[in-house]
Image 1 (cartoon, one colour):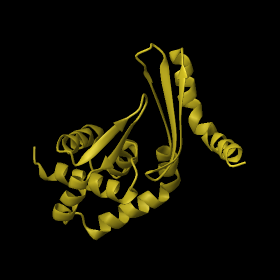
Image 2 (tube, rainbow, N blue to C red):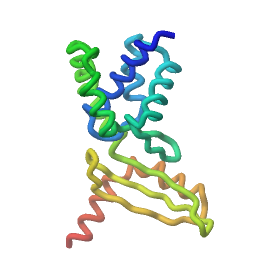
Image 3 (cartoon, rainbow, N blue to C red):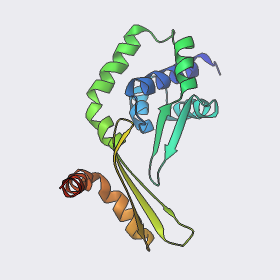
Length: 172
């Protein structure tokens, strides 16, 4: 298999992550690449895997989703080897990201996860971010895993209201 196309996909991934500036789900990048017919899902997953292994991107995983961001080494690699990405491709990626801005903000701003504690309870963690800046973070310890899942699932829909109430009450 020729290594040049996968290098091109890796550069697209690095460029996209460098432009967003916040961890995003892989679907944002994958949709751009596969919708344009550049490659298939499996080749793209291989590209993500190789970038992770080389520590050019990093992955943060919650109970239901992964988020990717570019590392400093990834930025340096893009600067040194990003020339094969034409200005047309870069402009197209920029336009795609602009059209997906709301979806990106929505996906990257409301993060929730849970894990089982040493005590046998479940700690649900909910975070509201603006870019990489944490606006609000709350951890709730519950006894039943289903409650932790419910908290995580409801976080996205209710986080802004919870944040506003907390700020109002705390700033009184």
